[in-house]
Image (cartoon, rainbow, N blue to C red; front, side, top):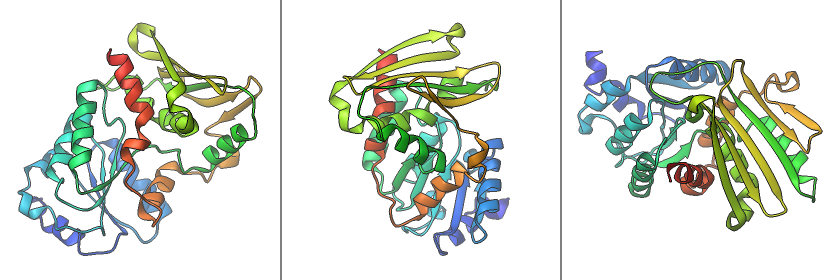
Amino acid sequence: MQDFLNGQKITIQVKYSINHLLVIGSGPWSQKIKSVLNTNHNHIEVTSVGARDFLLLDSTNIGVNTKEQIIWIATTPTVQLEVLNKIEFLQNRVIIEKPFATNSKELESFIQISNMSQNTMYLSEPWRYSKIWMFIKNKIGEQNSLQNILIYRGGPKTRSYINPVWDWIQHDLGLVGELLKEHQDTVQIEFEWLNEGKTLKLKIISGNKFNIEINVGYFPERVEFWKINDTEIVDFNDNQFINDQPLYTMYEYVESDRFTNDVIKQSWLTNEVIRVIAS
């Protein structure tokens, strides 16, 4: 550990190819990230460090300017902001784990940091490059009439440091934002807190194009499906997509030549929802 804290492993990391990933965070989720990527990618070397340990490193030891390393920050929003501040001068590809903000103050801090950072950043939307999302998006795109979409996402697991709504909401807001990106000027947002503030009902309406309801947060059992026009139900854990691993497809996109720095555009709907709820 002492060698690590002296920056030895991180410094070595940035000298290699883009198939080297540094995960900042030491909780169960960061361990799952490592497990999934190692299972799906035979040529990736994953190194991890706890966020607090990383923040203790001297700035001169955390790396050099390079675009050959991917950093995946998997910790709480406040700590993620601290990490982003620390690596601001680097030029890495950075995946920022959900949630990246849970209130307007964190949101404004994140926007300020992202505008100043020399890194190319991607907000964790684990389903955006998955097979099942391609299926859903194509289904919706085939229709020219008003699209009624009902979304349920959540489960029984709760964390002491975060409302379960923020733990789940970014799964779908990014996808809905992709559907609505051509209709931003017509979007109306309404919300209602349920279940003593542990579940959120979010209504998003866009003229005569989309009528979307998202129910997200705490549920007695895990749920994650989209119901389209009261007829088609798409289960995100459907067996036909058994090989669909969204954490890996997200990493694969960030690793690819297609990856661009559009973090503000990517998060526009999430930003609007946070502001509406905060007001």
